[in-house]
Length: 360
Image (tube, rainbow, N blue to C red; front, top):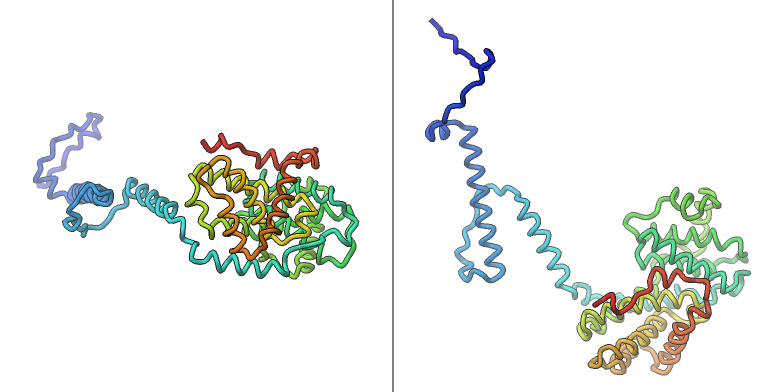
């Protein structure tokens, strides 16, 4: 006769848990698998810790590190460790691009002969002060939307290059639409996550320009400049010069970061001044602002020989030393009188102003 097992839980009486013997737990496949998984993970964790310590030099006998043959279960600690290790490797190897910087610099220097905009406003009814006001507004917009510095320099280059190539005489009424569209094109070209057209229409143009106007202007600008978006910028040129001359290795980290911020500030400032950016190539302007930066940093770091580094830059860029000094003097004069010359344009100072104390 088959007996029915009494279920205590159905009667409302809580079932009393019974102790499972070790032999029964081994026979239970679920418990056995969980136990095996735990042991594998625990053993793997210990092996990982041993490997980490061996990489840090805490273990001399690296040949006897046990090789894990079990299936690897991803642990949070190992994932974090791997990410940190990769980041450290990237930050430590600052010379990854060094074998190519000379070729890149020479290529961009060759490009700038035909792609550097000069005499932008010669045939247009747009004043230098209005262009400077547009550049200042570009600083505000692109910094507010967290765009890269390179996006700003590309946007200004597109705007100026459009002025140079346009056969139609542009009026003051064309400046706003041209500036908005140049920023839109530059963001699409440079940014990983560019500004959306709707954002440009609603937030940047404040609905004063229609979406169709922006689209048509985008097509017009690209066709006018021959879709040439690959020219050099001051930003690229001065960074490549610093990289080629290995300035980072010749300055303390604090002063090198100060120099980089100073060069960025001067590079943006130069684009305000029409007489400077419309008459000289980007390589000469980049070397000149580095000249000024070196002279300032030399006062902070007495062991830094600015004259020696400036001569090296002149040779590398193929520039005459007297010409470099002349343009650098203009850049320095602009820096000293910028606030007087452009009293109502404060976005450069607002978004790119800095002090040495910030790096301490």
